Image (cartoon, rainbow, N blue to C red; front, side, top):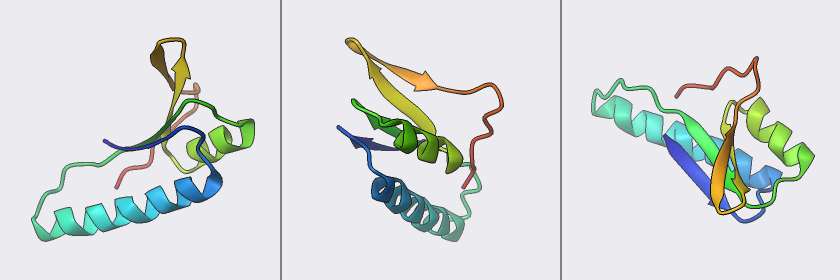
Length: 82
């Protein structure tokens, strides 16, 4: 799993993470590594539109919950695979 970590994730951070995962997939394909790659965006403060953009991109949303982190997984969520 490739995780983008930001204090306050923004939409352009999500788009940048998608590009990086595509690069990572190409690199792994060259090595004949066919393992699935999943993505996530972790943040301390998520706006509602940013959290929805993370989920729409097929990433897990990891948000701060007190002293720990909580993974947001809606019932109908299907993660993207690279």
